[in-house]
Every structure is written in C-alpha cells, then in structure tokens.
Length: 509
Image (cartoon, rainbow, N blue to C red; front, top):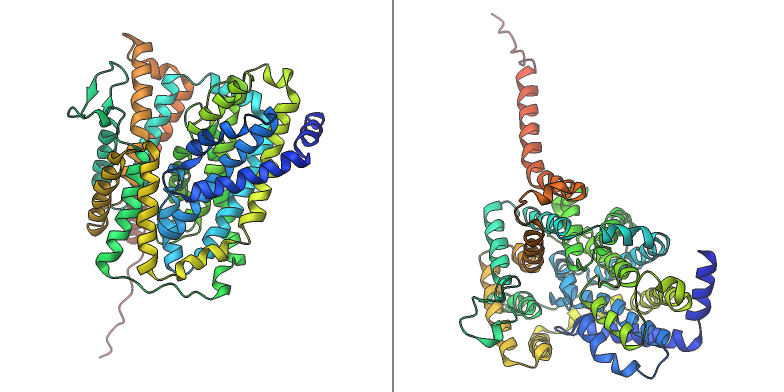
C-alpha cells in the first residue's frame, strides 16, 4: 500500500493537477450554494470542459467538484434553510436554528471540520479495505437492499417526535409522492393524470426547494420579519465545548456513512438521515436535537462526506455507481476510455491511486478555503431580510428552472412551498415526509427486484443472514424505545413500592 500511495502522490501533486483540483473544489462550492444544481448536475455540465485534459487531471477536477458541492450545499442549508443537495436536508434541522440563534459561524465551521475529519478517515479506509468492501457490496443483492430500505423507513420513528402516528402518516405520504410516474415493474404510468411532465415522477430537488426555502420564507413573512442577526465576532468562533461535543457524532457519522456508501445505489442522502437518527438514539444531548444542537449538524455532514468517498468502492472496483454523482463520473470514465472494474487497480494504478490521493488534497483545500470563511459567510445573516428574501426567491426559482428548463419545475416549487408553509404553521415535522420521498423509489425498486427473484419463494429475504440482521436492527429501532420506557417506568414503580414509608412524628401529649 505504501508503494501505491507514493505512486498516487507523485501523480496527484503535479502543479497542473493541484491547480485543477483547486478549481474543482471552488466551482463545486459555488455549485453547491446554488439551489437546484447539485454535484451530479455540476459534474455533468463540466465534463465537456475537461475533454482536452489528461484523464487523471480531468477526473481530479470532476472529483473536486463532487466534494466541493457537498460543503457548498451545507452553507445555504445552515444560513437560509435552503439545502443545495438532497443530502444537506438534515443539516437544516439544527444548522438553521443555530444560525437563527447567532451561531452560524460555529455551525459552518464544525460542518467543515467534521466533513474534513470524516473524509480523511474514510479515505484511509477506502484505500485499505476497498477490495473487502467491494466483495461485501457484491454480495448485497435485491433482498439485502430491500432490508436496508426497510431499516431506512424505520428511522421515521426517530424523526416523528412525540406523535408517532403523524410521523408515519407523513412518511407514507412521502412514499406515495415518490410513486408518481412510470411503474418500474410494468412500465405503466401511475398517478400522472395524463400529464407528460409527471411521467418522470415528482422531482425531488424542486420539492426540497419548495418545502424548505419557500416554506420557511413564507413562514417568516407570516410571523413578521425578524431583525438581522447581530452576533459578536467571538460568537462566530468554535469553542472547546463545541469541539468536545462534536467528536463522538463525527465518529459515528463517519462509520455509518462509510458502511452505507459502500452499497451500490445507496448514495449519500440515506447516510445523512441515518446518521441523524443515530444521534437521536445515542447522543448524550439527544434531547437538544432539533433545537440547534451541534451534534445535529456535524453527524449528518460527516456521514455525507464519508459516504461520498465510500461511493467510489463499487464505482472503481465493480464498475457500479454508488450514487447519482458517481454514476455521472462513471460515464466520464468511459468517455476517457477507462473501464472501471476489478482489473482497474492492476492495469492503471497511477490513475486510480492518483485519483484517490487527490481526494486528500481536495478536502484539505476545502478546509483551508472554507474554514476561515465561516464567519464571513455568517455575516450574510446581517443583511436586512427585505433584501435577503427576494434574493432567496430568485435563486431558488432559477435553480429549480435550471434542472429541466421547464416551467413545470416552478409550479412544483410553488406548490410544495405552500405545503411547507402549512406544515410549519401546523407544527408538522418535515423530515418524515422527505425521508419517505427519498426512500420510497429505492424501496420500490428493491421490492420489485426481490419479487422477481423470489418467484414463489416468499421467504427469500429471510434466507439471507445479512438481510435478517438488518431487519433485526429495524425491529430494535422501532420496538426498542417503547420497551425501554416501559421497563424504566416499571422499575421506578417497583422502587417506589419497596421504599420504606416515611415515619410520621409521634404527637406528644
């Protein structure tokens, strides 16, 4: 492995490659900030620009865009509750509340630090155990993926708050919205009402922009424009307590993100939701989550970055994309005449290890670029909302329109903006709806494939040890908290019954 790293550093550290890596992460950050674009769109748009580059230089720049967009999307998610990527949706839950409390700087800084640490750790793991995880991912067929999606749906319990039935109803609504479009099994249009625009389904990016950006904006206008945040500069810096609280969530998010990122097609969005759900279960400060807790920012961002690196395990070793952006990058490989697969590490070691080493360089450049700028980005909240809100509306609508160059996208944004506003006024949790919308199509795909494989064997999923283990985790996730609460109440009642009654003082005659 040392020889491979030396080869990789020798290839990646050329002035030309470092320059284009910097250009990539800078462009990626800007792309991530713009709602509606996202890393997949950004990479796809800029592939023609790289056709005159050498294959390694081109891939280094495109990978830089991929990583830069992850952090850029978090900036707007934290500052104005407008996630630029689907994986940044969870960051709005606590990040935006931190920003409204005058702690936008620490939220952005801890996001950058957590993403950097998780990237470094996951890259070491990627280089060390890629073949092992590739074999593991190869063993994950439709039954195992179906079990993973069931586990993902069960995390709705975590996001439901005290009203579990409401959370489940919203999650089911998200799944039903995800069913709009052409049925993957039969090719029959569903719930399209004859509208050609709906044949491709309800576009997730436009729904996200509407629910979060427009919905939050309408809610702020309803309650009255707040005064701009006037935080002191020292309030925009991280404290020792922030770093201490962020350590464990970063570690949990990194591990969880890497494991999920190694699975073909799982992507980064599911990893961010699952990491937040893990904090809801295991964090010492889990009661603060949803109110502006730093754990709610760093855990999903660490999971996102870790998963984005782990996505390259199936992409490079199996030639199967790990997510939407790596699917575009896989197309770029083919454009440059490179065939991903098990023989890639042997046939073109300089390209593979140079690309992997560039991930280290890119994430380091991102940290150097964005960490000092966190307080500067936070100053955006000092702008009066009479000027900021029109800017948010314009960028949101332009971003939505740019996805398909269609007015239909604008109508989707406006409709779900009203839905998001209504949910905020009724105090309904948005996360279960978004989670159902994310997992619904993936769940359906895995279910159709499993049904096709099983034939008349309805217990196929139970014949897989991995699937049974994952399903057991799902049962524990759902049944664990109620059982724990009942045991705690029973123990408290028993202790109260066994405690000696207090002695009453005797009356003196």
